[in-house]
Length: 581
Image (cartoon, rainbow, N blue to C red; front, top):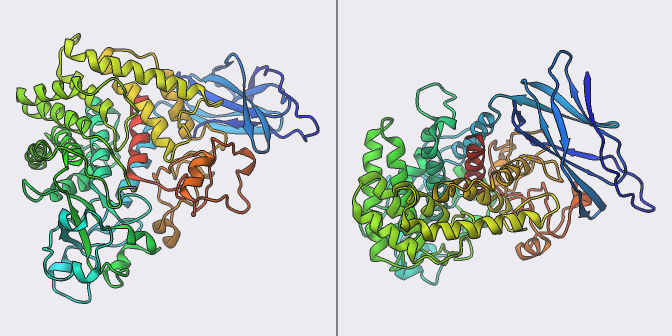
């Protein structure tokens, strides 16, 4: 193989320590032909030159070191961090080498396509209801209630009014089955994470984020089965139909199915039909109370965006989604305030105006009713100057970007969103600069969602003020999440043999099968791990690479850094799709 050699800077030698092999980190997605492909090198000793190896007859590529170094204070000793930018002009298989350390990678015209296809598999596996998936059988069926068969259990679901559960999150079985809780058909949808609960909070965020990303550029999403319908639309349908079912009339919105007792038992979901867990002979559906605008607004926005996406593919579903979105918006207007999950620390929230702004902007897009646009502008102007990255409980970025798509360029109504956008870009740059490897996860629980949320914000906010200055930083977060990180692990299952291999999920642990496409929470700080009650596992493969701000365990017992969730996966898929644009 021909070689392109770039001299490295002299590494820092650790006095008295054995020199270790350098770590060469690239992402599992691979390089895009003629695109910039970043490489991360961490080492303790002077490793010699970094070499790019080409197959015979391949045109030369480029490999350029970026200026400066940083120190990664790992538990096993300080590592010097170097960054490189690589480019190849043809597809193929290549390798990066330092001494005896070699790392292969591939280049293709559209490397993002395989990541998007893999990620969508997660939502197919998380489906709940009558259709078996590749990982589990039919589960939590409405027929377990409606058939009056005492042998079938754990049906979705029996309505539990807000007045009953405001302070109680484990309704006793005797009360749930006393005949005062009417049945409601909310089977289907998605299990939320490494459990079998279903939440409007995260389902609505997932649908809104991914359909918003899709509508920004439908062409990046694959159609692997060749049926003429983008796979995203087919994959999102269970979530869309479940949100519609969770709003059975104009005054009712179900925010959660199941409760924390679900976490007490490690089992397959289909087992619940004949062997229900204690206290949940049938499953409760918790109804939103007098303060409901956060999830009513978020669900309205999700369905309004879905209504636009399905036009021409499933017009009947598009019409139903639009009708439900309008009704949910009206419910949000009538119930200002925040409905948390039960218990509230599952998914805490403290604001609803952003959800209602996104809903109003999305509804204007699907109805052209100027009342919605006026509402969106008013909510935007009242929102203040702070803006965080998109998250299940913070959709201000999405609301501002969708409002901008409804307004003419340069509109005075974009002054508040523009100010918030500038604040967010400053915070994004500071977050990435604070980590020696450029990761903007901030040590949070779900750091992948934080880092990719920043990346998504950067992309979406271009619609507000045309500022693309943080584009490179956004793409860095994507590459980092896909394996260009100190651990060399892509945080999406199924992209690499390296991992994640043992995610915190009964579905995969009991079945013994991998859940391809699942995106785990990613590295967290020691403080976050302590708050979550997570201890380092024995024989931790990554022990030497941990820092107080960057801890990752590929271990089934670590539900902080290694549990997958709907919103984590949505954030990374959205960021990859934006990267591909």
